[in-house]
Image 1 (cartoon, rainbow, N blue to C red):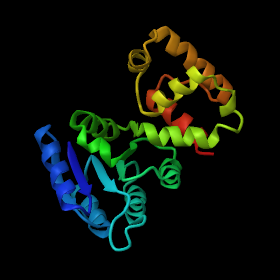
Image 2 (spheres, one colour; image 1 turned 60 degrees about the vertical axis):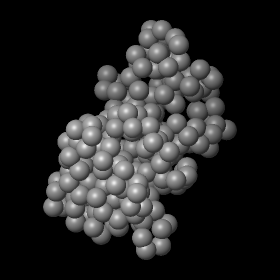
Image 3 (cartoon, helix red, strand yellow; image 1 turned 45 degrees about the vertical axis):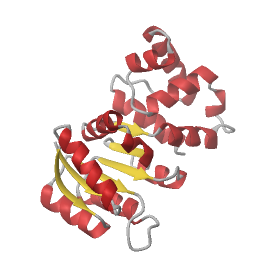
Image 4 (cartoon, rainbow, N blue to C red; image 1 turned 90 degrees about the vertical axis):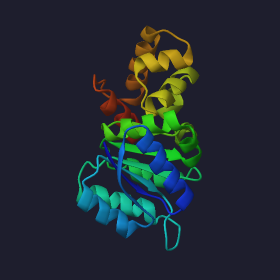
Length: 214
């Protein structure tokens, strides 16, 4: 798997490079700014790009803008965005396209190597990897409005797990319930949100996230 990294902090950039290589991934470029990211994506054709939201020169949203531009230049390019804090606006912009291969993680997750590498692989495969805190903020933002308000506490828990990209089996294990119960809650969630069920887990998650992003 070919990976391009855009992170301005050398130690973090170097640490991610070493970590990913230790897990068998090939880091073809590790850069510290948006223009170099776009050049690397064009030259290296990576399977996934890992991008810090804030890059030089202003350290505001250059990384996000570069990631979105990279996806415009290479449609469907899987992108995993890293941020120091939960920034709902950035999460919404990332989700706005409604296509697969997207992730938004807080930088603290990088320290959990197995979890982080799993997220990278999931995004590269066209799935999603949303940070639990990001999902919680999106849910809270919409909690007072229908139809999110119609969800039960358990359904909100299941929805949050779905948004992280977990399978029904993984959700069942995480919430200590049966997989059959997860299927039941999922069906209820789709019904209440007015979404059509799908056997495609990624489409299911993206549909839910697109709905939360309204």
